[in-house]
Image 1 (spheres, rainbow, N blue to C red):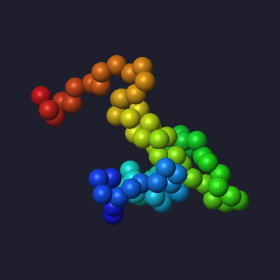
Image 2: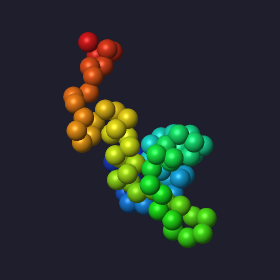
Image 3: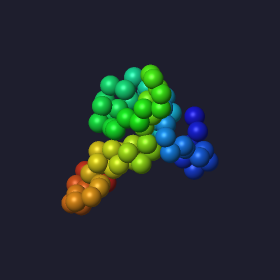
Image 4: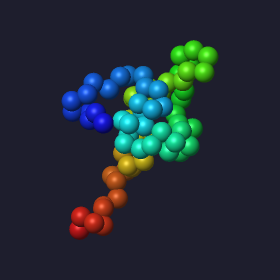
Length: 78
């Protein structure tokens, strides 16, 4: 699987690519992540997701983002 350091991830990704970008299965992406993202309809039956939206979703899950306070301390790192 490509990694972000060596692979130029596209700005618009179909579900399979977005899942690989997040290192989750396609079924997990479609069931748990895609419903929270804005879809970009490329054509009938073909949907893409903007890399920026995927990044924003990931930042929100990690407690980072606009208006968020400092993330809670990780108890494993104390």
